[in-house]
Image 1 (spheres, rainbow, N blue to C red):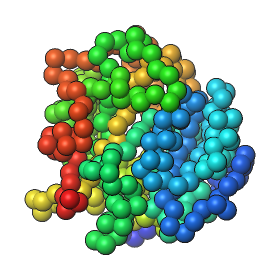
Image 2 (image 1 turned 60 degrees about the vertical axis):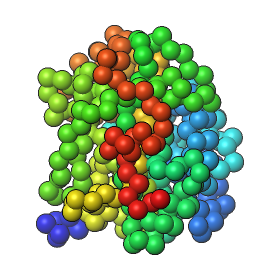
Image 3 (image 1 turned 180 degrees about the horizontal axis):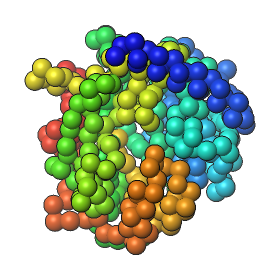
Length: 332
């Protein structure tokens, strides 16, 4: 298996090297990157609404420079990002799906610009929090991880949603989306360990309950490894759910203890998701077996109410830790 995975990693790196020709630089400020800077990476499309809060949240955490690929936005995303002094931007109109959902493009940028840096790789609808995040920024967390020989940090993606129909709750750029998306499912998660890559395959949350109740194994996976001390020989295999070398996926304790972990607050269910669902159903760019998710998109287009009597209102990271959705481990 080690031999096969080694060759798989080499193929992924070679694939990303070839895909670099699909990227056109718009503004390259990478000369500003200092040796110890934490970098943020993302592939985006039509995210002008989310990006002001997304960037500001992660700036507050300690991200110093963002490497972003814009996949043919037409809502002002490109213009907004070009004006940000800590963003380097590339554009492409090639297929998001055929670039392994943007991972090929980001892997090339990581090979070129991120070697030796801690990298936070996220979608624009994800915001990282972790124990003590309000008072202890990412440089402190990364230094603590390095002192313990850790090169990666895991997080559970937590679907957040409002009370009432999704389309009833307006959102304005720059606002905290989790002021409205303040509810989540606390206890319906299934976890199994993948034998090949050693990562945790976690399913559950509001999407599993509301859209995949008849076949929960088809629900999206929620476990991610978004924060990594990058090396140009590393490669994500499936979004940020797993990467190679496989040791980087071991962000959990299999001996009965706990390892420090975080949560990605997921803002997918803003009111705009109702309209976007129809567009994404036609584009079929977001899932490996897109036609299998037609019912999912149809349900979103119907403007559902995801709230239930078992929904839990978010009060802070200590609540998530008490529920076992994140862990302090030795980070005290």
